[in-house]
Image 1 (cartoon, rainbow, N blue to C red):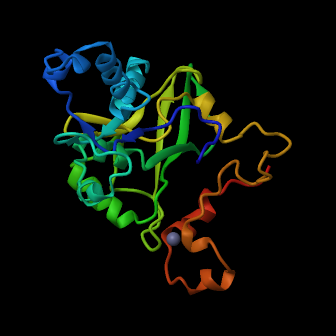
Image 2: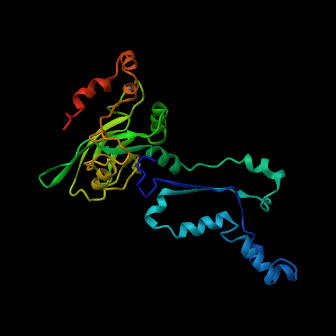
Image 3: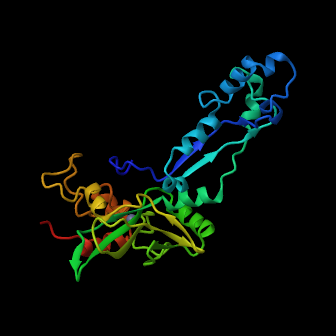
Length: 278
Ligand SMILES: [Zn+2]
C-alpha cells in the first residue's frame, strides 16, 4: 500500500479454517468393503484430499512452488479438526469452529512488528571515496506508537536497527520524531558500494534479525519508489514529496491547530532540517 509498484510483499499469512488429520487406515486402504477399497473409493479420497477441496493440501502445494528465499516471509495458521470435517452446510458445528483460537507463533508476531517500520531516503546518496553515503529515516507505518514501542520492548528486547552486514543504526526506542503526536522518525546513515547493491535492513534483538518493511532492496530501487527522479512531477500529482519534508502529525491541520500545540520538538527542528527549494 505504501509502494504500489513493489511486487514483493513483506509477509504473507495464510489462514486456514481447519483441516482433518489424514486417517492412516484410509490411506492404507484398510477400510472394509469393496466400495471403499475399489477404484471409486480411491477416486473419492483423492478428490477430497486434492488442492481443489482440501485447503491445507492446496497450501502445501503452493508452498512447494515458492522459492526457498521467500519461505521465511510466509506463515500458515491452521488447526486440526478432530474427526471428520464438517460439511459445508453443517450449521450445527459453526460455534465449534468459531471458538477456535489460533496460535500466533513468536516469529510471526516479531515479523509483524519489524515490518511496521520502513525506510526512506531523505536526500540523494552522496558518492565519496568510492562509496555512496545514504542519509534517510526509518519511519513507522502504523498509528499507536506507544503500544508498538511497548510491544517492541517485550517481543524484541534490546531492539536496534542494523544492516545485515553489521552496521549498527541505533536503538529502536531512541528516535528523532515527535512524542507529542506519536510520529516515529529515526534518522540513520549507512554506506553502500553501489546503488544497485542489495541491502537488508532490520531489527536485531538477542542475535535474531527481523527485516523491516520493503527489504531486501537497493538504494536505486528506493529512489525509484520515492520517485526522486520524477522531473515533471509524480504520477499521483504530489510534487512536493522529494526531498521529503517530514512533518509530524502535529503539523497536519490548520495553522491555528499548530499554534495550539505547546511544544513539538519535531516542528521546531524542522526549520533546520528542511532543505531550500531548488
Ligand atoms: Zn508532533
